[in-house]
Length: 356
Length: 118
Image 1 (cartoon, rainbow over the protein chains, first blue to last red):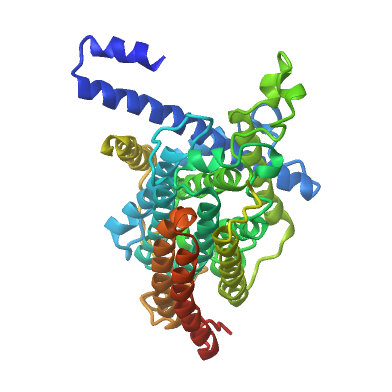
Image 2 (cartoon, each protein chain N blue to C red):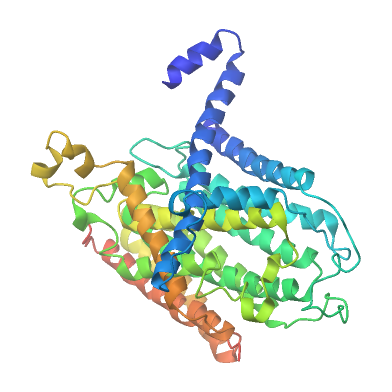
């Protein structure tokens, strides 16, 4: 399909513009579904937490409240963006951009299905590690530029928390790299093909737990949401933000949650690979074979499961105290990953690879 | 080779562009009626007591410094983890020595109380 488009545009445009246009179309084809997923994640969150607390959740706008995300968005567009008098105006307005840019750009290297990836770069995981680290700037700058005490406190807390959990996250990634032998996300998934038992979640179960817990802490979700702790510092770093400026932080947060969910499924649960792999009597069936076979729907399903976990945590766990968060990050998760990596390295050096 | 990174650049531009468009839309479509009370920093209804540029705990700095050390360590581990298959026992011993030095430092800072937040 892309060739037809390329030929069509090639008739009256120079070559470099055609390349750029094709890339742009592909980017939009990723960004639009992503925004939709983000919008419906907010709806799903309210519905699911509603059911867990024996309420109905949003049910007024559209059928069973299905249009609620759009209603929220239109409302927020027409709200005033208050810029506090004592804030640093430039940094105040640039902070939401710095939060959203990396949260979206990280999707460039995510493979949705075999070969279905925008930028099939070799250093995919390194790029992701770099971009997820950039996310902290938006938050810290927002907190500092607001010149409000709550925002300031939240920025400090969040800065220390995010960098702490990034270490545990990075070490967990190293474990995945050792098992797969590649930084390319597509190759990491392909290294897990075979059957459900070749997924990295089995040999790297500890790292899988560490990675997802760190992911929850990285996105400042409950139970690690001291940065937004409503009862202590109101709304944290975005207490001074209103209207669209606030909703950009919101979008970035949910895009990051989807990113963590997608990455966890890619690196530990075989991404687009079907759990029924190897069971040929299922995958060779005429029509149902497509459902049981590999494909983007499995990635979506696995990522949705992790999103459900995000909401579930929020509905069930009480918030951690700040010293407990730092203790969990530094004194429990990091030692676990260090020991795990050492044992894994030993296994590889001795030629014993349980996942192959 | 570098051409593979062009989509990433475009995606970054689209990401930032989208944020700029949304923010611009909000600034254009929303009303703007500033008043002194609304524009003052939020402090539970009180007028702000003092500037928010306050002194804060040195431990936040400490965590940031420790983070740099460990993050560099991870950056070193990345290429090592990729080629571990081919460098075998030599690789594991070399990284073992490297990690031991780091872990000794980690134990030191733990015992010194740099990780305590009580």
